[in-house]
Image 1 (cartoon, helix red, strand yellow):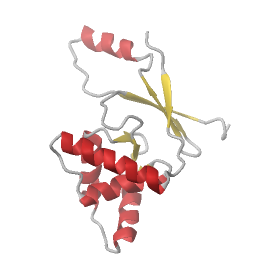
Image 2 (cartoon, helix red, strand yellow):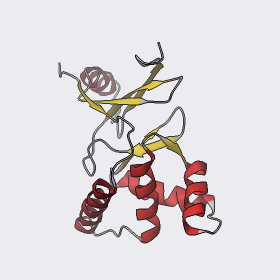
Image 3 (tube, helix red, strand yellow):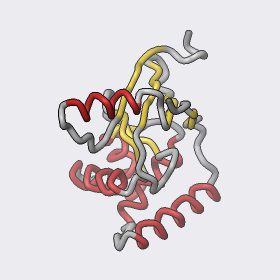
Image 4 (cartoon, helix red, strand yellow):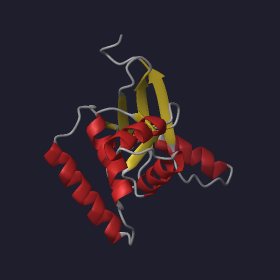
Amino acid sequence: MTTATAHIHDYKPLSDKAVTDALARARDFAKSQSKSLTPQRASVYRLLLKAGRPVGAYELMAMLGQQEEKQVAPPTVYRALEFLQDLNLVSRIESTNEFLPCAHPGEPHDCMFLVCSCCGVALEFDGAPFDHVVEQAAEKVGFKPERRVVEITGRCTDCQ
């Protein structure tokens, strides 16, 4: 059994330098995958890096609209988020349909999120102990998992 290691998204907004560095790494990684981190995609990623918390697509749309001083259509934001997810730069909290920068940008991995139902803080665990159970169950029925995301809602220590 693997031991879970917590990768905590502490939801403190990143400094301008940390955001610039993360964007540079994302551009380099996208290029290594023969993809392009367009200005629109970079803007969405920047907003997530600076937000300091999980953010929904419509909130991102509003933030992007304010930043660019024009209305942004939902498909624009959803396409950017899909691109960022495909490159494993962004994770999606499925139960709340919110997005956050990935704890391991560019590295495919399965996630387990502990999500506070009060304040929305999320903890991400990799190599969770449930991995082998999922693999065994899927193998028994001939199912090949493509992506695993487990979410558990509850209350963080601050909200208890």
